[in-house]
Length: 337
Length: 116
Image (cartoon, rainbow over all chains, first blue to last red; front, side, top):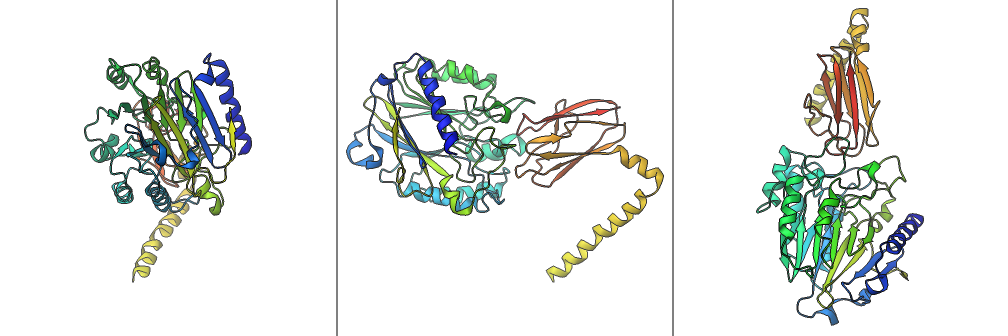
């Protein structure tokens, strides 16, 4: 695990060194080994806030806000990797409810259910009802589209969305776009957005000021992490070409049940942990199937992602925290690059 | 009471299985049996990836992963429902040809059935 994390950091460094961007003026990156990763991104001004000290006290200027990303709750999964995914989702919600700064909303980046069953969605709804943020935005994962072309999902979570469930909304000056890359997948391919959605995205972003911070979220990563396991989206490059002119772009994904991140120009990519079960690092196992860990370690490999938007400098800071840690950085060690 | 019902219901399949096994022992049926094929889904892949069978053979897929999969013909010839752990899907091929297929949930998973 440690080696993989180091590889990832090395890979990120590689990317940073090759992108031609003056990273000192653009990005400050901090990693806490073991518990998670924090990075702070700024459109021009580096933000070096110590998040462990708590965001709420000095940063609650008007316009600042926080949201939480949860992912891959897989309600209905009951195999040895985690026989009680409802309980771990509940733990995640308890963690959100205990946050010092109350998040404005939650984003769920897909695989709400294991088999798209109405009873699984019912259980999910029941648990999410107890979350203190009442607004929850969803995008589907491939597990949510298994019955009748995703009708069950769309009836419940897709009201007011386009196509197979894509949409956008604005929150205090930040533009959020929920994309669907799990529908109509082609043999031999990876995730796919499709022409209709790409055209919609181009139009949705057209006319917006380049200084508007943009957050794209979708289930399967919008960058190619590991093609052999289908961990990428075939037509993501076209989607990303539409956001190139923006000064701050954050891409949030799920699907791979582990934290991965990359910075490319002004675009920061980030994947979240699952609330249900971990998956192996790319290529480290025969397949991407659920990774079994000793029960006492499970909560260290499941978690939530907390995103703070700081209005000065229009920056977004992403903080991952495992379910088993009392605070995101409790046992961490700071590294900078 | 419930236990008793289950026991009675559980008795039927072994009886049927025994009849099938006895029937399979006769040479005529055995030839037909050998023509059928099994594809196992393990570790997000179809094995064997390519299977050749005669016209009229039945191919049975079994999902042995902890994750659901589908078996769907790329050309729309056959389409399984979602198969969770240990669930099966069978298709009998009445015509010669090559039938590529994939898992619509994990499209990197592909295979083919060649019917001769």
